[in-house]
Image 1 (cartoon, rainbow, N blue to C red):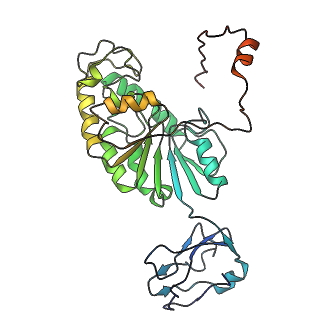
Image 2 (image 1 turned 120 degrees about the vertical axis):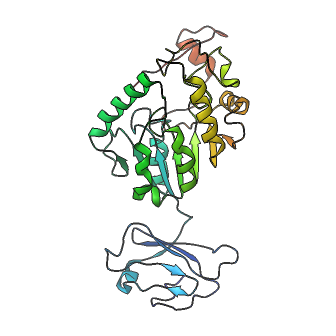
Image 3 (image 1 turned 30 degrees about the vertical axis):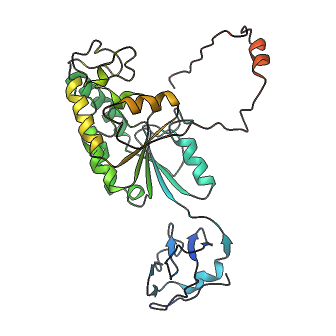
Length: 319
C-alpha cells in the first residue's frame, strides 16, 4: 500500500481499500472483510497527542493531523485485539492466573491489560484498586465467611463498566475471580457487557461452597446438608443450597464460554447441572519451551531415585 487514501472529512474510500491499524506510529494493514467497501482505521492510545482523533465511516475519513502520516509506514500485520485479563493477583501463580498469557499477548502485538485486586508487578498494563483495596478484600472475606454468604457480597466488579480497560476490551478473560472478587449475582450483568470467557481452575463454580468436594456428590443434586462446612472455603452456617441455586441462576442467564485445562475438569463441567449448558473448551496450560524441555522419562526417574512404575506426587507452595 502506497499511503493514505484521504485526509479530509467525507472523502470516499476505494473499494479495494485495506483495513488500517494505527499503533505506535505504524500502519498495519489487512484485507477488508467480505462486503466492506471502506477502510477502517483504529487508534490505539493517542498517537496524535490530542490534536485530532482518527475515525472511520462508510462515507470517508474524519479529519486528522496530516503531518503524522509522514511518520507512518505500511507493514504487514494481523488483527490486534484488546484483551482484559481479570484475576485476583498478577505475579502469584502467574503461570496459570493470566499474567504470562497477558505478557505473551503483548509480545505478539495485542493490546492486553490486567485488572487485579492485589498488584505485585510494576507492569503499567496491570491495573489494581487503591492500597485500601487489599485491606477491604480481607475484611470482605471475613464477612462472607461469618455470614456464610459466599461469593454474594463483593462490590469490586461494580466498578468494571467505568474502567477504560473494560470498556475498550474486545474480550474479557476471567481467571481466579472467586469467591469474592466477582460476586455471583453480577455475573450475568458483566458477561453481557463484553464477550467473556472464564477459565475454571477448580470445581468451586460447581459446588455450594467448597473448592473440591472430594467424595461428596451433593454438588450433583443441589448441595444442602453439607457434611463439611470447614472445607475450603470455610463457612459457619449451611447456606450451600442457597449458594448453589444462586450460581445456577447466574450461570444459566449468562452468555459465558468456559475454558478448562484438563480432561478431568471438562468431565466435571459436563456433569454439573450448573455449567453443562455452557460451551466449554479444553485448552491445557502452556509451558515456556525455553525453560522446559522434553527428556527421557525413565532417565529422569532414575536420577531422582524413583523406581520404574512407581507413582509420584508433587506440590507447590501457596505463594
